[in-house]
Length: 90
Image (cartoon, rainbow, N blue to C red; front, side, top):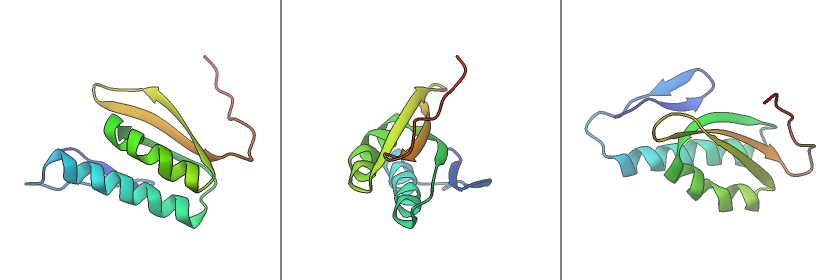
């Protein structure tokens, strides 16, 4: 069981649920933000959720930029395709 960020600074845990449920909640929460047209989404997601979100984000006109973060998490930034890429200091 881990904390899942639903919206910025709001995290939930679902005791007694398995990892598939957590992935479904992650994908669902980010999908709602994509449907609402949020300009940029920054989250730490599981690798499985990130892979499930790729085709959804593409259908909504977004690009996913992902970097490995922790053991099973990926730091994800999702931005509209029309926008210039976000620059990061390496």
